[in-house]
Amino acid sequence: EGRAAAEWRPEAHASPVVVETLRALQSGDPMGLLGAAPGYEQSSHELCGVGLLVHREEGRLCTVDSVVPRGAAAADGTVADGDELLEVDGISVITMDLGAVAALMRGVPGSPVTLRMRRPHANEYYVTIVRWPTPPPPL
Image (tube, helix red, strand yellow):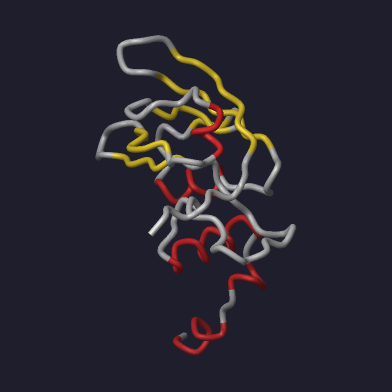
């Protein structure tokens, strides 16, 4: 039993999205927001996010804590702090845990992701954002 667990490798048994999500969680960057370090060249198989920091309080929707400066969502300018995330590419995230939401938001750089959002006390809206690595914040 313990030996089987020690030999299990996500690369051999899980989808690429799950593997990338696990790597992001292990690296301390669960939303894939920090992107590549200066001087690092990103390969075409790596995934990135859109530059949104979100949280979920128990029994509540995913809420945007921050639109990361210089990220894809900041460049688009539609999403604001406090907006609620309802769907990612037509998939409801209302009952998903944050890890699953992060996996849906991540994708190949240059690929679009469509979000259904709701601004508090306002109507729902859709926004399509093209994913790209978010530069790390300046030191």
